Image (cartoon, rainbow, N blue to C red; front, side, top):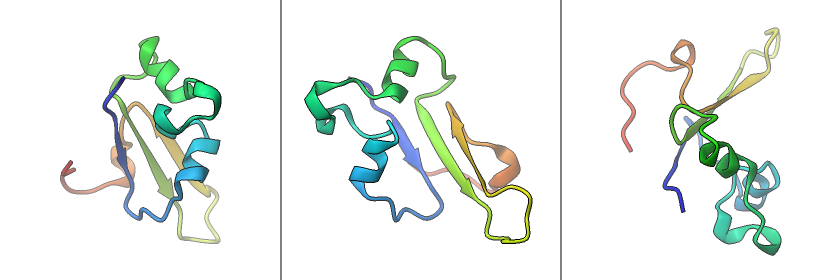
Length: 83
């Protein structure tokens, strides 16, 4: 089992939503399936066992948001992470 961290500047995610996106914990997976992010960690496809979301609050912006697997995009975060 992996210990991985979920970072979000606003955590209003439900467990079922995270699981449906393949980002839930293996313990809550349907039928014991290994979530895709865990498979990526097992295969060494991500730098760190972390994923992060950036959601653009500017409705006129070109980007709606970003999912970063294996880290945090420094272009969308200022400060220190505290786990």
